Image 1 (tube, helix red, strand yellow):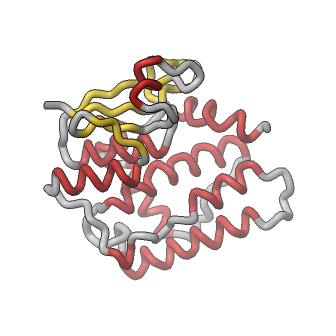
Image 2: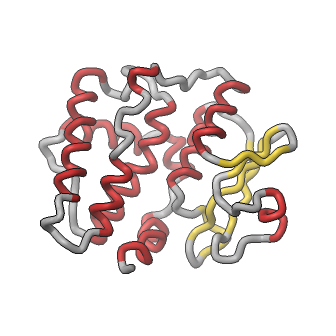
Length: 212
């Protein structure tokens, strides 16, 4: 029986997969585990009644598991790992928080209107830490094979590359060679190709936050 997952629809295109990195993380996990699933695209500007009935908070992603709808990508990924242990995507505990501050730093820098407020430097520091880690342990965060931490980072790095490139004309410095190799490796995975939002929808998704 196929699993059911509700994820964000694209801004202005409710029948197309949207740009939520947390939704994409769940889809990536389903793809990497080769699990059959049915996707419900949720227009966050006009949420369907059935969706609010099963999920009053109205957040995405949600997964239907044992006839219950479960929220929160951390919880969902944990359930999928427990119920479908093969192939294992477990990240060794000592590596599970690698890169965990990159997304927050990226969002702060993206929204920043002041070039001297330190947000760019904070992001560079996080990317440098990731680069150093990958140099020692790569090509993936935990070594030779992809694990849950990579599937959490991949959508966030995709957003970072697309959104900062568009709104700030900014790219990850060439000196972070291991981060560049890593993003190339992640972005070329079939699972990422299948589950990523088109660049124009990533830009449309961030535009209101950048212009706020």
